[in-house]
Amino acid sequence: MITPRFTVRQDHANVFITIFAAHIRAQALEFDVDEYQFKFFASPYYLRLTFPGKVAEDESSTASLDASTGQILVTLAKQTPGESFENLDLLSSLLATKRQRDHRLSNTTADDRKARPLIEDIAEGSAAASFTSEEQLAILQDEDFDWEISQTPAAGDDDTSLLLANASYGFNSQYMGILAHAHDCGNDINAVPDPERMTADQRQANRVATEDAKFDESYYIDNYINDEDILPLIRHKTRFFKILRGLQKAKAGATMADLPATRLASSTHEERLADDIESPLSSEPIEAWTEFTDKEKAAMLDLPRKTHLVSDRQPIYLGLVDILFAYSLDHRINLGDATVESPWTIGAVSATLSNLEQFSALRPTIVACFRRALAYPLYRNWDLCEKVLEDVYVLFKLGLRAILKVLLDIKLMFDHHDVYYVYSKLYLDDYCVWLQTSATDRAIKSLARELHHFELEKDELGWHLEDFEDLALQTSESEGEEVEGGEALADFGDSPSVSDGQQELGQASGSLSEIVIPGSSSAVTKDGSEANGASKKKPLIEILD
Image (cartoon, rainbow, N blue to C red):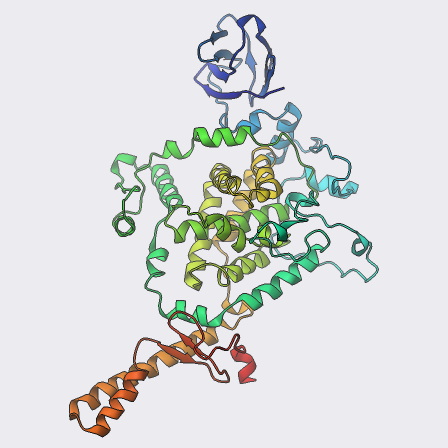
């Protein structure tokens, strides 16, 4: 059966359903209304919608067919006039069964905790976990998570998980075999040498080692000193920030007419940056942000019809933090406009996508985000990373709807890539369905609070960033003194000895043209390359020891 395209809207007393089903006859239409559910059938189309409130088929209910356009308009009466049905534009939620909707509601209220868990039909050969009664009980409870690290005794060498021939990965660790040929098809995001056999612990160890090897202290120092191109990106106010400010102003009683307008569609990079400085708020109507576009609605209709039995929801939420951090970084450095490189940037910065990581606590998640943001993208700057973390907080503050719109945006990017589309199947499709059917506002708000007060020290990354910054500043100051000395010598005349001194000092002048790190045979140039051809310098701490 084919699920037709549809839209749903409401007024004070009615619900209006518009169904698009081409090449059908009026005599073939069948409708059924049963309190919370509405069913439509006309071969080969079938549609079942589950509403948050009760509807009725009475004398005011109507149905009409426009044969020329294939558009069917159905009007149903609300059993309780004046009741507001929430989230009628979350199409996957409307397509859920009544039991699934009841389970979702039970996760957001404290009165009903007896709903049965959602069961996903597992095909033969899929990676399925076994659950104890305690784990099943935990699923039924509200997401009152502790975002700190949980400690468990290390397993012995005879752990049976090491004997598994295949590893599982992806959303809720439910996939295997999909990345078997990732290295043969040009998948530059995948950083796992053997994704089909490496366990989660092995993938994590490989990720840390790869990041340590990829981190370039010369590149970091150059971006730290020569930050002229980075500072405007840090000052840039994203669309999400402007929306949040607008919502806060509206909540405080201000009208949108009183708010200054910002031209979001500036034609040049410089004009957009100027707009950000002039006005902190967006001229985009707040109502437009809460509505899904036709493209987003079509993407939601194309999502798989499935439910998830998740034994531990915390890694799912933490993976969401990781993916949103990667998206926010790309969104900020491109001033809100995605590029052809955006899928790679998001995939490379996200440890969830590139290394199939499964996080267990918030701090290791943020540490991994910062490490990858300082090792892979074009701009590698600590202050930029902190600003991106604020962007992630803004998304969580805006709530489930904003996060769903962002994930749909990421999904559309990956769907249109010849190689990276596989990550839609592994993660993005499931996340888009799960956000509509199982994620709770309580957990999202809890994460928003944690992110708002989160602080990360540079030494937690393990790369001695402060030592490199101090060294760069000292070298820059010494170069400045040499330049001043050279200018003073130039005032004495044109004697040969003075000219020689001027030439030597002139070679040493410039803004951090060359930084030599003690104990290293190479120098850092303006473009981040090494002047003497050394491939890797020792960390400063090792030299001092």
